[in-house]
Length: 424
Ligand code: SF4
Image (cartoon, rainbow, N blue to C red; front, side, top):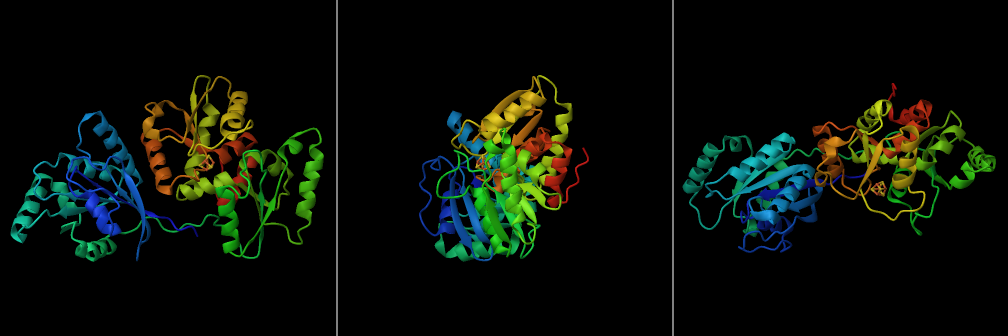
């Protein structure tokens, strides 16, 4: 099991005490705290372990009420962070008399179905009656505040840390539960990993999806076995030799491997060469299912649009990281070549390592083809899915697209382990 981290974000106006709250969690001066408005120039992220909650990623965000062009940029970043968070901590100075920013944070959190708690940060000495009156006044001004659990404390008082953690542990219901990377693994079975090792493959280690899959199989008492496939040989005039080498390797097992997990770009060889009784799927499909919290069917649905793709339609190829590229790069060469061949006139654009909110024309695309997303957090990937769903743009994935291109039988085969039936 890969343990998912909870994302907890601290939000509020400039100088409401967000960074001090972060420090209270961390018990150290990790965030810069002073009284100059806008000290938190960008979001600061820290990893902590909260006993009873597990690993937590804490976001200390910039104030949302700063003016000017830079302030506007910070706001965009803050609201992008909000999408990634599982829990929103809204810090409010009980003496404030303007709740317009807090109102927007609550509205956005509701829109995204986020869990939210209010932290009333008491500055200096405040009589409990005065504090209660202040909170009542704020709840009168912004009635939605009544719907949220709250705590009041001075966030610079280190002794209140235990109380804060107790409050979170007793009220927060974590949404992200540990998910199995490969839900179909069976103890004692063999699983073959097809690893082509092209010029892009770094020396001394496997790529992240490959090492995650290998570790997961081993942890679950299965037996991972790697096979290096020569893609050039397999697609060249002497392809029969490479095919025989692969089949001979498979025949050496006393008991047939349960499943082949292949690099997506080898699916054109692996799918037709693998005996019917052995299952096949791809690393990219494994990763996108895992990172999206099991939403593989959303990416399968995205393929439907391919049957109606017309000349002039725009397709966006998305990679979650910027890695070095080779001549036969999957995102810049292989997928575009397939699109040009099968869907002439379709316009291809790329979005590598950038966030969707930087793209003002997201709604113009007919389809997004996303990589496995192994280098971003699950929450970030789910935030991307929400963005696409809001603008009604279908999304699919590298592994699914490359399987679809090989025909419906191949697509059915790679989906079989996931118990997803493909009706097109
Ligand atoms: S984030 Fe995407 S492009 Fe980058 S290594 Fe992972 S799967 Fe490949």
